[in-house]
Length: 215
Length: 291
View 1 (tube, rainbow over the protein chains, first blue to last red):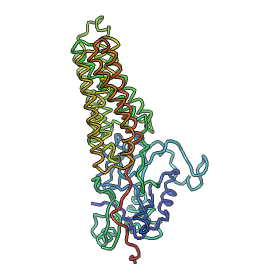
View 2: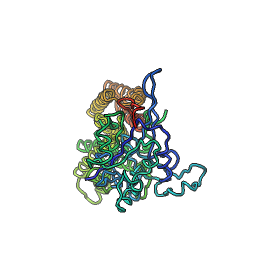
View 3: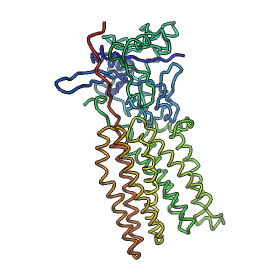
View 4: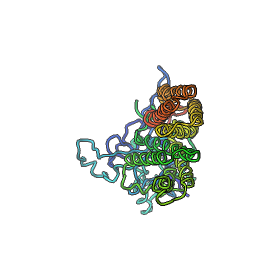
């Protein structure tokens, strides 16, 4: 089996939001919609305070609460673990959005652009009017992964088969790969480090790992 | 503060979604009390018709809420797991049985010599309870929101639906005939049960680590909910028991207050109390060691 997961090394992330920009650029998401987000968090008590940057988005859970509640069947789970949405079926009921413990789903009800009422040249590239009035979210750039695999490439290793946020990361904080493959990049990385997953108590088995320290 | 570093109020469902829970709870409660009243000789037609109208109005409001209303029929696609699909499926026979029951109780029954509406009315009430249960599961399955996923929200909103339905039933009955004493006792019991369910819900939520903003929102609505939906109805019902001459208008008044209290609770629960918890990490990352 294959299960694609994302690993974010919090030691490396500098909060530059290049991943967010790359995602917005590719998908033409409207203002306020960030399928790949970086949470800017403060930890500790003055004067011992630290700033932590946490890349987040859809966790592509193996037990996704958004899947069961979807009445239309628009939310689906692929054999490789990617949770995606069929925007042509979704009715925009937002059941999935209130079921997601990670706040990873978005809905906009009217077209919005960064500047004025027309898309910029950049926004035109990924803009999809069918995404208005439906739930949207990160799909791990499934189109890139599928095209890459079709060309004999390996997701997470070959950039042409790897999610755009990972390719764009300037500090090498993000790694993508198949956790079911014992020899994969993500498996080796996780075996050698201390890591955690967000809101594990929710029982969702998220596919997004966060590295804190050496193993 | 940025979402993620702080909890965030959900804004996907607004007062239109709350109206679906109001219509479903009140309507299905009303259908239950209408058939129970029917078996003891009370008028069925007006209460049942209003009950069906409540359910229909609630569904209409949620239809206005969804992003792609002309695809609404797609909601029937996942009955194996989705309580929203099941709610939609149950709604169809509910309206069919309800229409038959109401028709059988209308004057047309006499003209056509139709049988008593007890059987279709009972079926309607059972389907109504099923519809209400689906709604409770819909809100409970919102796993992203501690205020909704807490298990004790189900008895709270279930009892509230029955209380709201009885509230409207008392009002409708009071307009037509004197309200039976038994009905007043039932109302008193339900109002007290809902108050207990409210405290049990709040207590469970406080121990579940719900966001502070949720607890603040619940604390803010508590006084209004308890006074409007419980204290005033109890006063009116008890007064009515000691003053039988004005018991019927007092019961109607109690019914209105108990119903308004439930509606107030649902609107606040949906629009003000449902926060997605912030992210937390077990320790700060250890920087400066990676190659």
